[in-house]
Every structure is written in C-alpha cells, then in structure tokens.
Amino acid sequence: MEDFRYPIGRYRAAQSVAPRDVAKWIDEIEALPRQLQTAVSSLSDEQQDTPYRKGGWTIRQVVHHIFDSHANSYIRFKLALTEDRPTIKPYDQEAWAKLSDSKLPVDVSLNLIKGLHERWGHLLKSLDEAQLSRELVHPESGTLIVKSMIGLYAWHGKHHLAHITNLKKQKNWT
Image (cartoon, rainbow, N blue to C red; front, top):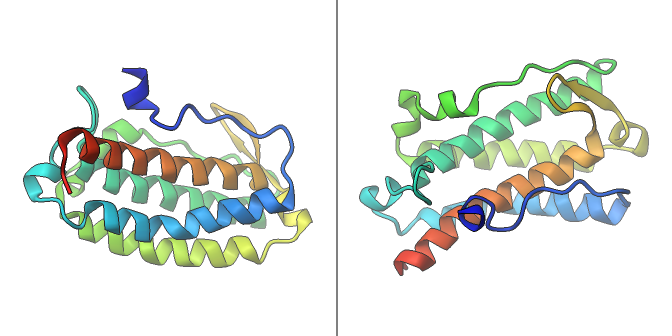
C-alpha cells in the first residue's frame, strides 16, 4: 500500500538548497501542466473516475486536488513575500476532494493549472536570495522557507503525476 500512496517516495526536505536546486524545481513546476495534460488526455470518464489505489482518490479528484493545493501554495508564497512571517491557514484536502467541483471535467482544472503555473513560474524565477529565504508559519508544520517550499511543490506535482501514470501502466491504459 505504501508504494501506491507514495510512488516516488515520501517528501524529504533538502538539508541545504543550492540555486541549481531551485532552478530545477521551478522547471519541474513549469513542466507539470503539460505532463498532466499528456497523462490524462486519452482517458475516458470511467477511467478518470478510477481510484489510483484502494481507498484513494480518483484520477479526476487528483487533478482537481493539484489545482486546489497549488492555488493555496501560490497564495502562501505571495503572503511570505509580502508579509513578515505570516501564519497561513491550513485546509482539509480530504473534505475539499469530496466537494461537487471535484466531479467536474478534468479540463477545468487543467486549464487553471496551466495559467497558475505560468504565473507561479514567472514569480519564482524573479526571486532574489533574500526573497527565497523569507519564511511563513504553518500551524501544523512550523516555519517554512520559500526556497524549500519550491522543492516541496515540485515533489508534490511529480508525486500526483506518478499516481496517474502508475495507474495507467497497471491497467495497461494508453
């Protein structure tokens, strides 16, 4: 079950973050919309409504979750860049995944992810070292640093993309 939940492994924060790490992670964030589009474009509605693991979200819910999560993250980045150590509000991702908008066609969120990631990538590429070192406070996770958060969200996109691509391989869907 662990392999299905964490197909690329659990997230591990880097002990130190070099500029090349940040650049690589930004590239991964910018590439995600195209990769998601490719991963789901050939899937039928029935396939999109298949859970990636027993008890897990459907592919449709995963795509909508990526938008929900990354939209929240984008706002958190902007808060960290414009306020002094803001405390952000967590959200219940399980409850969000059960709301009716998680049953919409995946194209709705794919279009939103494309625009969001374009803006997000532009913003991230513009940051200097002082901005990359800014902090925010997550009530459950503690203090987070902007440059480390970039790595977290690069991992997050690859993590959920692997849920989709692994299910496609398992089911022999093309």
